[in-house]
Image (cartoon, rainbow, N blue to C red; front, side, top):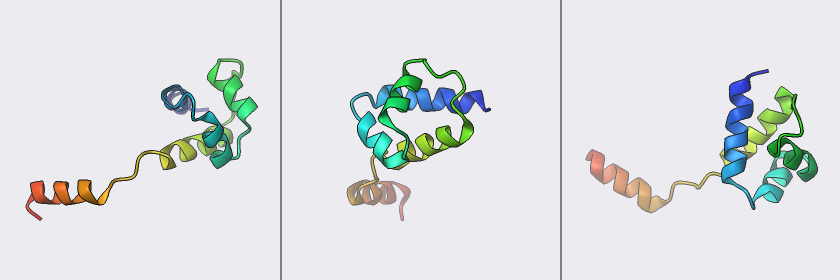
Length: 78
């Protein structure tokens, strides 16, 4: 298993405390499992489960707004 992946998911979960129910629902991983993993009670989480969580966490990042895109384009002279 990739220890960088588990550490990355743990960091993202820590940053999203309070949103774990939504992460659980979106990833298909139970809230109970997610909570146990985030609190250090699961030593070998499994690659597939980590990928489900990583994908859900990535998908929940703030989408870029039209205003941000226009501002970035103006800065780049596009």
